[in-house]
Length: 331
Length: 141
Ligand code: HEM
Image (cartoon, rainbow over all chains, first blue to last red):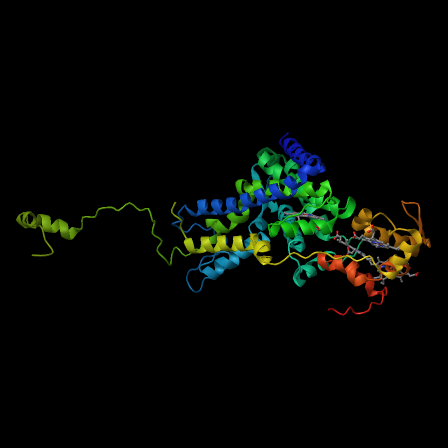
């Protein structure tokens, strides 16, 4: 049901854009106004979100420890899994961000025998599909930079070359296109296929999946099937970034659908779970060094407690103490 | 609003902005290129004289989007089925050939095919084997 609602929402959005962009007068809206607005919301929204997170103090070290922390010299220290230095943290974060290190530990839990025992097993599919999805998304995004740079740098052309090195068909088939479609489909099937995962899945989980699938499908349709005037798309893209956009007649509604779904993604991004793109860098369980035993971390909002020292106490009562025969430190 | 860990947080925001706004400042102050696609080669002018108009094997709008599909199909037809005759949607017959078809008319590869392809960073690998039309080096004035 939730999946269906999300699917219908994305289909409706696509339909709005397709029908809207078929009306010549609306092309400026879908090609220029909405993309600009969406991009501004995305950038400002991300910054606001980061600042909001940064306004919470993180006084103590709370990294999840997944290795031996630094201890006595003869105990082997796991420098990356339980880092004690900034460098170790950077290595740990890099593994996390680039290779989803913690998801790699994913296990499946099952009752065995008469149900009183639990067994744990490998569960790497989520990790593999997640990694495949994120990397292909990134590569596609980098390849798309050819629309936004006039003299496309050699590095981007090299990525295009590697991505299409199978040299199938014309225009050349990109491997990442197949990978992103397959991996997003898997991520969706996983959500409806595993009862426990289905139970906890919300519209906020299905909607972004379908939205990204919609962007990829419209892109693939445009490249391999319905075709559009790519040269004019680049003219539009270059116009957008130099604040002088021109929307050519020859650009097909499919392109505007692609762009509109992307605009929806941009708007949706900062206010949804997708903002984990920034959040992963700010996870205290990952980005803190495990050095509580080496450094003292003081809570910044500690209440200033009034302390009455023994010295002051003795000054107050010295005579009385002497009278009662109690020992005093200062005569 | 008090911001904690200002150093890393602002570094992160600056990196984010630098990446997100890259296209804007990268292109700042540059004039956008105007494509200059030339279809005035001798063969095309000759064709125009005989037939009264300039035309491609298919309508221009179709060629713009689909020319790579078209020549790919041509290649398959020639190499696999030994079929060199192409009947276009406009009812004309054309000889299916890259070098003796497309490039006969579009003998100005640098000012035609490459003009678009360089702009879009596409590098068809056809010319690894097929011979490019000989072009006089244009003397830039
Ligand atoms: C998150 C951002 C985006 C994603 C995930 C995405 C995804 C895709 C995919 C999967 C394709 C299929 C072909 C390929 O892989 O190159 C594609 C094609 C395309 N996209 Fe995007 N896209 C995005 C943003 C954009 C933007 C901002 C534009 C506007 C300039 C755009 C314009 C196009 C065009 C014109 C094509 C057809 C390209 C061709 O025929 O080679 N896309 N897109």
